Length: 404
View 1 (cartoon, rainbow, N blue to C red):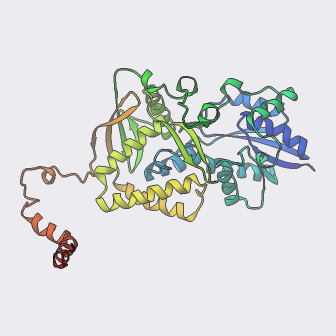
View 2: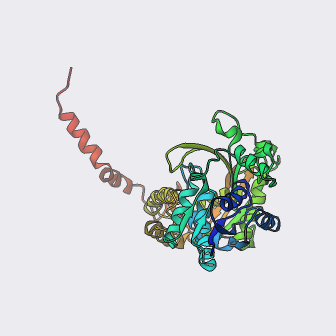
View 3: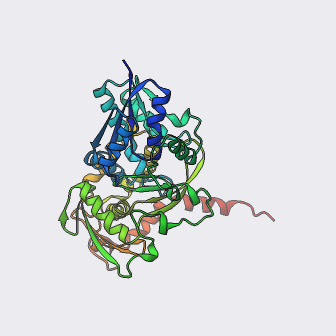
């Protein structure tokens, strides 16, 4: 009986090459699994491509709802970022893809899972750790770590020699990953950090900011316990809400990030990320937290935000620490409900008002006028005690002999 291998299949260049390569190097039956996390894909064509290139079967698993509710929303509520810029579009999707691959491997009785992540990238770590979390017994086959192919150009040559259609244009050979949260671009001119990105030909979800409309657009985002539930008063489920904000944000060129980041494996790499809807939501959520969270909670949550970003980026989604941090975040979000107005203009997002029934902002306290809740005279004693270490040090310094 032939060995069964479940392949994480996207229909892109890497996985199109992997199917014939697996058949040439392993005595196996290949089950291609496409995990739909909202990428712009023609699944009918992709399924046909998988079967035409040698897969015994090809399945499409629609997990968009699960992706939004169980992966994107926890990251959003935490405000998780990597190195202050990256909204973790690929990093949040990979754990779910790995979990889904394991589910299909169990259903099919497969003994191995294969993926197209390279030996230099982060995704190999996210896939491997995600698979290990649910199926430590399954073999993991990562062709990029073992085959002789060294570049995307050699992959194209590999397919052409076998008469297999190349699923991309040579002139547009950016390495891309997309889902409903973002699109990433790597390669070509981006491999040199001093090159300006060719946004006119590169961008898929957004327009370059200079080509955005000359008139700003206002949006109102409503949140319930840290989760966005409506745009401009219209209630939406998470998937459609993100698609709606991608459309609106992309039209104004917001959420385009050019970053040289530190990969988990130690090297620096450059990428351009398009996350229009995500950038709008992160901005709005942060504005709401500023009026809903007290100082100590907000301050500690910034520490949690950074740690969550590191964990998610590094593939540690299915870990006790990530789950514990998410539990803390959820407890803070019980107070994060309200509405945020934003202005989108030429690639920028700016605040246009925020309100919440749970707001800690008190106009009587904040006003320059003296009110019943705040006596200006109380500040003198408070400042003396608050700054006591400064006073003690100054008195000590006065007693020291002068040095000529």
